[in-house]
Amino acid sequence: MTANARIVLADCREAHGELVDGLVGSLWRRRWATVVVLLRTTLHVLDKVDGASNPAMRSAVDDAWKKAKPDIFSGFIESDRNLLLKEYNFFAGQNATVYVGEDRSDITYSMNDGLYAGQDPRVVASQAIEWLDQYLSDIDQVARVGIPTPERTTGSDSDVLGNRLGQIT
Image (cartoon, rainbow, N blue to C red; front, top):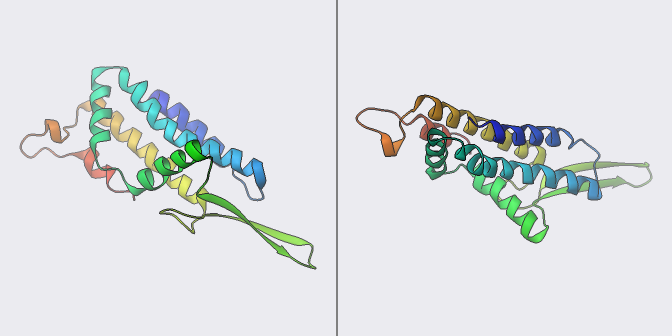
């Protein structure tokens, strides 16, 4: 069961909920960094903790990892985490529009670079959370009922996990 990874993912959902309108400066950076790191940590905990819990789970996790990863993983979860941890740089940014003479400003957020440039980073993070949730559910299903994967497939057996992994980009 992916119980430990789900704890991390639940914390990530809560951190994501704290990315409310109006955050600026270091508060925005700290909250965004938390979400990005927890997204990737979910997969590390899946591998190192849940994957080590029993042979069926180890096999399901390993088989899932061998599949092609969707864009949300390679173009966001992994790349943003690497950029953050290795350079303390962010693809996600905050933008301020100040209306001179009107005593007001608007704060918006956008991905400034990478595959998701121009999109609201909170929406991209939400897509990543949903992909991870489905990824964990698929692994639980494979580990629980032993759904065949390509390495174990014979005849007309289907690869449920492989089909789902490629659905979200």
